[in-house]
Amino acid sequence: MTDRTEETFQARLVRFAGAMYLLQMAAGVFTQLYARGSLIARGDPAQTAQNIIDSERLFRFGIASDIVCYTAVLLATWALYVLLRPIDRNLAVLAVFLRLMELAIHFNVTLNSLTVLRLLSGADYLKSIETGQLQSLAQLALGVQGAGMNLGFILLGLGSALFAWLLLKSRYVPRLLAGWGVFASLLLAIYALAIIVYPQAGSLIYIPMLPMGIYEITLGFWLLLRRAGIERQVPA
Image (tube, rainbow, N blue to C red; front, top):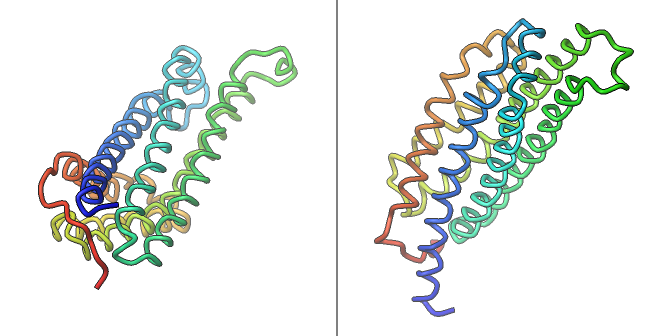
């Protein structure tokens, strides 16, 4: 591959990574704040169940949006690995492993949303279980999904911090943006770990999510819209 071809490939890879960052953010926000988040009535299983039954199609769109989000994260992870492995191959591989473990957890816990739909389906095989119990089980499944997502956030934060560190060492993004990425990613990982020990901290979720959101959206636009200065990175 000639130098010109390599630079063209890297330029396309940078834009692809940016597009995937923006896609996963859009899909994640849609699900968490609207498709699923707007239907959950905290502490009220009956109302939550009724909301999901009344808006089943929206809830299903949320599940599909989760899958789109996680697939975009997978593709962005691949793109960043290819882009940053010349900087430090060992750290890039470690970052990929952490993000893949995160995705394995998040893909797995998405099954809880499908379980909720089964519990609230009104199928004949569920008629031996009281309605209130089914509603409580559905709320439990959603809670387990939330806990699983939080567990994945620990790995997300660590993997993202490593990629941000590699971006800091490269010349692909401004150092301020990459440094903010390290901070925001580690803040998310620490917060997600703290929730396990102090569950009441869950009400403060926007404190780590806001810095992380700012980082990922800014990074996505920077990578997608950047046109000049894409140079081949050679390890020192």
